[in-house]
Image (cartoon, rainbow, N blue to C red; front, side):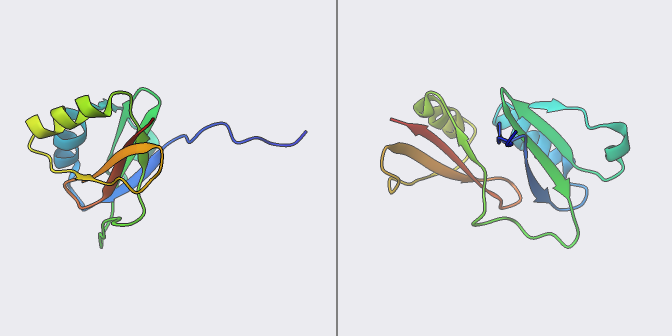
Length: 122
């Protein structure tokens, strides 16, 4: 039997060492993700994991650190306009990009400079 790809399990983004609280403030408090507990065997590596519905983002700390400015997760959103309103309330800047036919989308940078795309297909 041939294999099939089922879904993307998670995306890992990097952050500087000891930046877990800043990640919590952005992903949990501002974007509304829920923090999920890392397995005991991985806690010693640092970082923090988040989930919102089927979307999983793992923040892993590293040194030296360099943000992902081109590579990025693209998160499909239902009611993208409501997310824009939420981001404005939280003083999170976003950059609208209308170059993808059939999609409304924009980009934000997390506190570490990683690029994140949010989009809604028409």
